Length: 529
Image (cartoon, rainbow, N blue to C red):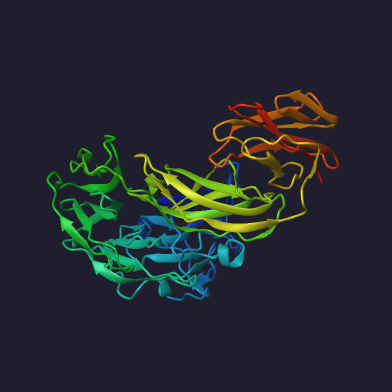
């Protein structure tokens, strides 16, 4: 592919188009911090190859963009420091030292907070959810309040949920003059808005970077500021519950923070003692600094999964059903990416094996569920952090419709827990996985779900309650221990090219009680469509 000349200080990966791979927003500050070179967006094709997203089709003839040029990846024409938020104008070129991808408006796609060293920091809304296709709009004029910036040295910004309401608030470093400020996220109705600006005490210095983390384990996000020309500072969040936006910050002065030439700060549990420590990178040949948290509060706070995407009801098919969630934990969002994030799914009450969710970067996580599930589907999210705390979301439901799957035949043997049942939980489309649910088993005893290419001509009685409605021997089977409801779910791949064929299933439950050793279900005949 082609290359281009650039001056970059920060880039962000994120799944901008919700296709399951990470795209690249490439920020730039321009030659001599001129702020005239545009940021660019490159989409990942899923194989690690990136191509520029440029719906305008416009190509620059030099490195800079000028007024009236199309916005390349953004709606509208280039207009420096525009406040237009309708898509007529945009400003995609500024002296950005930092850019941040985060879902700001609660629609589960990643928006873009675009820093600017000496111009107005900007906000770009991702219109994927609204339009169904990727598109961007500069909404700076309507998203950010009057007076949010007042000059140069806007080196950095961060986003985090400061009031545990599920949306992500904003911290701007050196934004109003050399002061740092925090803003409450007031977005509603798909519109990105921030308000209630609060200036942080003693922040009128030349700072360089900030990070969110819960240093005192009280359940809200505190801030560490890496100072370039003063002492690094720690701010405690005073939020104690209540209405959104009622957070405030107080500077605290723990022993150990020193003066330096800090360029960056990051947080992590360095010594694995359950609390978050701080590392700063220093300029001018000075040694980097590690600040160990000696409060030792121990992280016992579970992740907050306040917002999860609703899957629409509809016909079962071969297209995966995508759901997303925003997750906040005690560390910065980049540590939450490494939580163990799962989605529990049940169909008609049968619990499927959990599905793994992946990070879209920012505060968004994504899961792909089978599109061929059939029946009443429930799903919920969980997020387990490095300290063993697990947060769980509320449960959501949808209905997947389709033609009834399977015909029962043959005989059964009833066990102590009642009849062993068997049913298809998904449509058996070629190239998909078929989920078979079996119930009526003994808790913590095994159930075998077996299949064959033909039924038994007459039921085969092996004694002890084991009667096969399948031609013997079966082709394969799954042995699974029953859950607390005496149920199991087995998964079988349906090969491509198998349309029109029949396959036969049966479940056998083992009992450690007097009488019959086994109970047997009827057979289930399934025709592959």
